[in-house]
Image 1 (cartoon, one colour):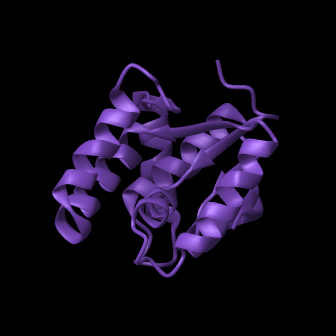
Image 2 (cartoon, rainbow, N blue to C red; image 1 turned 90 degrees about the vertical axis):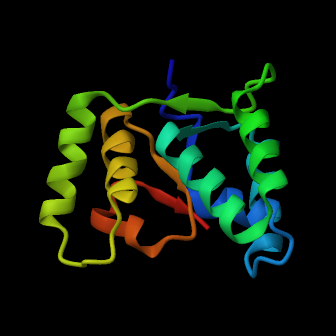
Length: 141
């Protein structure tokens, strides 16, 4: 069950920055990750984010790191909560995409907005400026 007060939704760019030591945001991601650990925040993401991270890591960083991330997420340790959007959440995401003024917002970003709204999650750990839409939550960055 999602506890909106303690939950933090984690975006793909954060996972990529944490895993890729050459990423310009690696150090910042590590500092913020440690801060959230100290707060005992419950970290959540979506299966769409996991797919995006595995794909980007495999194509741009290292296939081995992509597989390791997948094993960490889907393995026995259950390192974080995975949200699988319902059709209603996906429809809401499509509405966000339709209403967006920028052509640069992705459907996965819109899904993140719809998930956060649906579950009442108040904090999103992301370096993506497109997720600032509407100020519905605090952006941890």
